[in-house]
Length: 271
Image (tube, rainbow, N blue to C red; front, side, top):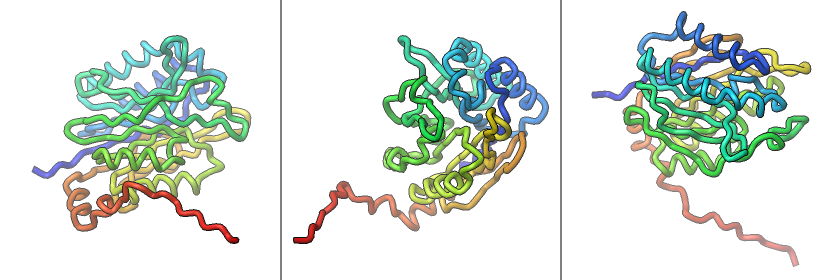
């Protein structure tokens, strides 16, 4: 039987600093407009609190509430959820964490952001701690490599997922509106160079202090072509992906097999 999946992205504009309002917003979208036959629902980075680092630590006290909410909607709708990210706390340290819930509401994986964005006035690294390693999770027999936002600038993590057998690469983001070209180019490049599907989902709308999220969420296939997208505003976008077609393409053009184990650079100096 051909292996096809319906992946739905929910692009929203989070209310900065108001976890309960954002939970209500996501629940309302799901109750009113969740696309039929969704297999996997993906949410954006820090959808619970918005891209405002000063609110991160305080928002972590809602960790159990958010987890229980995601588990509930997984069970109620019999869908898998890649829960974007929210701020978690362990042993006095805070992390930007992406949880994964199966169709029965079980937490089956969690990935904490490996690269923290602290440039151009942002200071994520002052509030939270880096995750320690990549995390790949099997959802209904398909391997998903998890990443968050700024991770997209580090192709090494995606290559590691490809070598480990990833089928779908996930990047949940809150990407700034001033950087549309890097967002589009890097997400498509990660898909092409690793011959994987890429789900690149970001928030939309106003943040604070004159800053906006980009929107422009896309599902991209293993050739870099868009399967589905939502460019502005809030709402769902659903794409059907075919794991069998991807594997057939890989057999015709098995570039992953040509990766060398070592790329040591020979440095030549003028005398």
